[in-house]
Image (cartoon, rainbow, N blue to C red; front, side, top):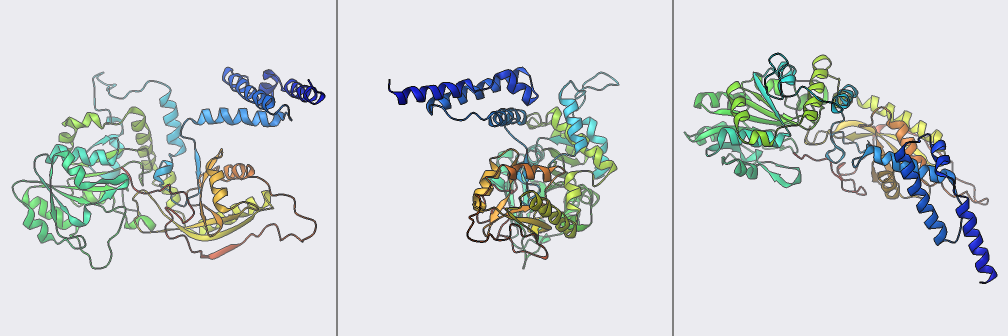
Amino acid sequence: MTDSQRSTGAEAAGSLRALPAVDRLLRELGDESARAAQVARAVLDAARERLRAESGGAVDVATLLEQIAARLEAEREGPYPRVVNATGIFLHTGLGRAPLAAEVASALGHAAAGFQQVEVSPATGERRHREAGLLPDLLALTGGAAATVVNNNAAALLLALSALAAGRSVLVSRGELIEIGGGFRLPDMMRLSGARLVEVGTTNRTELRDYEQAVTSDTALILRVHTSNFRVVGFQHSPSREELVALARARGVALLEDLGSGLLSPVAGPLAAEPDVRSALAAGVDLVCFSGDKLLGGPQAGLLVGRDDLVARCRRHELFRVVRPDRLQLTALGATLGLLATDPLGTPVAAALARSGAQRLEQAGALAAQLAARFPHARFAAQASEGQAGSGSLPARPLPSAVVELTWPGLSAESVAAQLRGGRPAVWASAARGVLRLDVLALLPGDDERLVQALARLPAPAPASATPAPAPPTALATETSPASRPSSPLAPPSQTPLRGGSTP
């Protein structure tokens, strides 16, 4: 063995001896659980392999602790980790749509750890409908006579068509033959239900007489669909809800309306243009279906509200058991409805969408100042902007918002975006025109600190050369005029194409 080989072997042995004991790591970590010990041993094993392969090297205890903590945190988060949504799309389908209110999350966590009174009546001990516990609040909020719940709105529509129109015809305007996210199309769903689609009118103009001429003794339903993920403008016309209600009653057929986004009652502001459930039922619509995880602000669910007899037929259909929700969906939905019964702005969705553009610009300015103080080598600028409700809500109607534009020395905007997406905590944002855009529309309490933690993991710039004078380290600007956005905030030119469109 040569002197060089002996020296290399001694260096490797010294590095291996410098590795800390598991007990020391656990004490410094502040977690002496059996699982933490397992993870610590795995991290130490990986470090030993690296040191042997490299014939020695430095042992950094702080890095080992970070690796152990990161693995434990990833395990606690599970396969669907929490992220900071800085995309400017609040109900982002790819990011889980509506965040639950803190009170709802608490109720859900409390219930999940034990048994629940779901399908039994405490008064009689007999079996009851599993959604019975939340019906009083749901009916009070919507003004409906009866209701039931399934696992999403596409399931609610499929169930209604199957139960009420299988083997018979359903009238739908050609302008409402929508496709929702993932390539699911209304005509395909109609075929699956066994109902026969009868198209009326044209893509841009459908008159009341088109429906009148199409109604026959074979007609089971008139279906009115809210075009929640697009708008037809210009030379267009559709019969009013009141006209279709009058026609349905005169001809003895039921009127079913798919409202999609789940706005329960009329509100002012940006949501004023969105159709709501209470107004539809008050106008005489026989049955309404809508989502629970969009503007309602709850978990994924599909709700059917309307006439007693129609709801009962849906509940008796064989498909009902296939699409029913589980106890945790019902718990979260019931808690959300209970919150809305006392506070119309009680959900994060409602509270966020009620904020003004000026408030969002002020929030972005404060965030830019906070980040500039923490990372003086980077540049941050607050700008007015436009966001979206997302998930088929408020189609083509932008919401006033604001962004913090970030430039990080030595990294492209696309590289920063990719590193933030893969970090812990993960941050989803868009990159455009050479800057990273952190939109404040969907930021939640605590997200400012999560952004600081995420940015702290980015590589610091190399020390500046002594010869050229460096540029000013930070430029903080707050502008009141809207900055131009990418052509589509769902997929800006440089953004990874994770979209916030409408899916079931």
